[in-house]
Image (cartoon, rainbow, N blue to C red):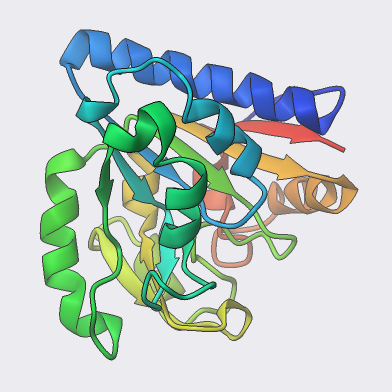
Length: 223
């Protein structure tokens, strides 16, 4: 694990956006395409705001969430809705958004179609993850119903996940998909998250799911 410490959160968000833009640019110049995977929630919003204005060949960038709540995009709980508000706008409006939700009562029925939509854009070029104080990342929650399956080397691309801390059922990228990303970044802020990160280093992925990607990740932190 590599730890990057910033003097304040504003510098963190700007610095991280610059790193991600640079890595995406390298893939676009070399391969003509790139895949960016990002978390939901409000913490990465300033990173998205900056990225949305960067001059990249966004038409050849695929964007996929790390995970999504099983709610329609019109819901205030939808990560996709937040992503459209903060990232898929401005210059980045041309990016291709790969869905992790489709209209259905439960995610199980739609997983094959969602996997088919995702598969052509793997492996991920640049992966940005968050981490909760419980050491979850994506929707890999400690104690989740299918966590062991999602951490297994032969896990499918996507799994539905249900956990007490998750609220709604969710769909998540599994550990092998996350670990296969070429560049892995984790964004955390505050002393609680820093302490959780330190705890995670001494635990197993079943106890601290973020541990599954820490060895090859760069963690970006400011208090």
